[in-house]
Image (tube, rainbow, N blue to C red; front, side, top):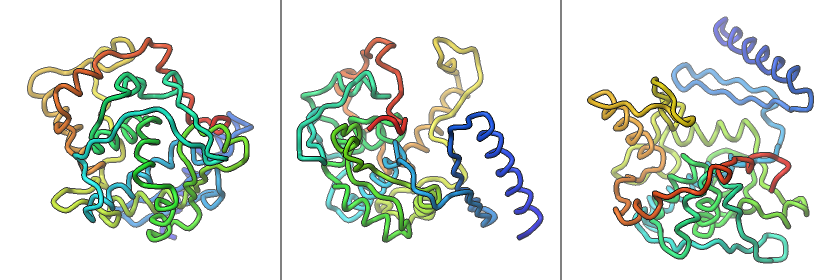
Length: 278
């Protein structure tokens, strides 16, 4: 191992130890990959853990693969509903908008949304409703098979989000830090079904949202105006398009207007990522 790699490993280990000391009940799993240098590090990265919202990444990859092969289209209309069959016995269940980080999609139930919009909401907003709707088009067994073909040997996608009956039965999605790194590398290297004519995720950009400077209002960064603001918004839009493979400007104006009204702030709580929840 080179001196730089050894120094990076020591820094990661120190950070993990600090987290473990601050949160004694926490288990810290680290997977790190630097495409520029080829550096790879792992701490407990082969141990399986509750996947929580990380299972949305392989769902995105399988959807992109099917679009690339012509089985699906980003522009195709998907009916919006909130009734899903549990993996445990097939019993129907519904998602709670108050527990979804994207509650405004629930306001459009009964209408339609483009598949590309659902993929963007699933990744950028971590929408649970969008995730379950996408998994009706890309079944979990197919998602897991794609993971295996990309070299992720332990990740398991069994079901959608908030399936309480399956959760109580111990039938949960599982992931490892190592496998998530493998999938992110496949996405960055365009090995994960990049649709023809569209760019894949930019490997130098590690985040899907731009944190812009300025005075904060109600917990949100102030929107910059003028040339700087327009350039920043173009960069953010371009990254989202590279990530999902879909141009969000294709959303019809009527659909954008329908989602303008949000639920009360109490509905914006984000608790779905906890392992104590389905």
